[in-house]
Length: 235
Image 1 (cartoon, rainbow, N blue to C red):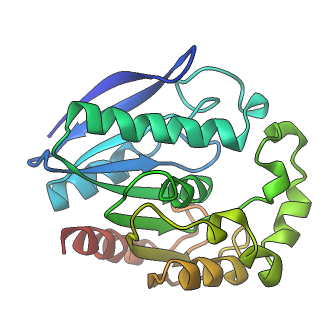
Image 2: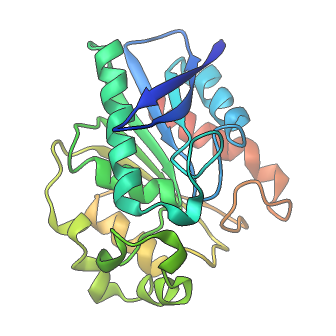
């Protein structure tokens, strides 16, 4: 497997991405990482999935993350969704005959889920997907009240009215929802809503906190975690 860095133009700037070339270019996985994370921090995870499935993968640094421009506090969710869309379009331009799958983690899961409302996604992997209030979609991250966000994520009735869930997808994706049993950032109220609205198959990683790379997570469960995701993508 080879990995190369590329730049993806958006409007007046470009974001950085890593292209992990697998044995197949007919199926491509777009990977959207968590808030504050980077393609570098996720390179080992993606490399294992690519090696197991044969898929090629594009992992992007959203603006304010990794090697992409801007400070993260200056960015807004709408900007990141635009970047995810541009990354999707880059794949379709360069590999027009490919089938696209998307995997998103936490904030990246929120972006991945929203992307299905604007682009056709065949398979969708949502790992501990986060969600933000609709009013904050055009708010700089520095001004988003994180305590209020956590309250919102427990409000099932409000969650069901989120535009993400009210808007129909371009194409209904097959969805795998990955839940971490000890997750304090994304409560069960949120993951249950994603499960219901996306008719998702669910895998619960027992003993895992929100961050996959947290050293407190049970290391004997890591191999199974990779296996479940890779096997599901290979079906």
